[in-house]
Image (cartoon, rainbow, N blue to C red; front, side):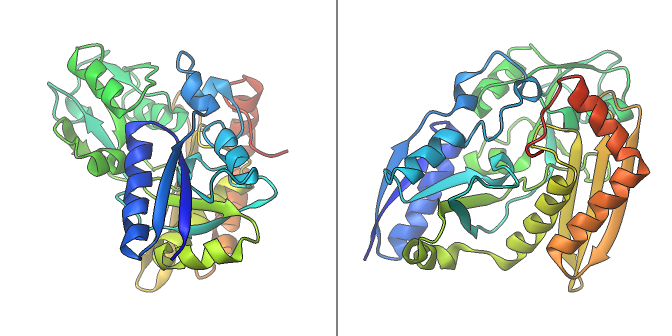
Length: 311
């Protein structure tokens, strides 16, 4: 059996994801080593992600380790991976997807509606901010960085009345005590790829790809390919106000997507069915651009709130 070296960020959630993948590989009889790698995104903790605008800020250093042959594969939260991978890399597997929804976490309040006027809500995501402001313009949105434990501690310490996090990370870590509301997708459309893990390898590494083939989930591959095609069409990274949620319904792929002003004053929505994930994502992206999404995104990029991943 093969000896495989996995590269991963060092956060608690990233290590859970890497160890989970390691366990699945070991169950196949492989020997596995884990190398922890600090990324740009892990080093810049005092600036909102949307203002950093670094392409691949959670992946660059890990890809360098891959390219140099220090590791054989990398386990990422798929939403951290740019929609266009750097040359020389490929996604060998997208694992079975966790819940892709966002959740409302609070010590004192049951859901978004029950928050008092002017309540402090923590998130560094323009996508979450826009949808919160559309629902509750009175809320004060404040930046929230750090790993899951740090964010939950700040909430418990009273720095925020509520924080919005991904259900997947909390479920994986078993830290769901403060989850009060699983936010419906029609209220808060998730980020493209949220809840899925992407396993990256060197392009053309047929041996490793074959070893990882059993981890690739067809449903997760279809839904995330569709969502990432939409994101790519809109030229956006994970920190722009774009939401995408695809799922197979009665054998047909369905995509819901949004583009929003960061202040929530305007949200464009589009839903379509299709059979080809890539085509469906591109079609919905094109419709959103023609409906005014181009103007919204130009304004976002122009204000320096986010930087598009590709030209």
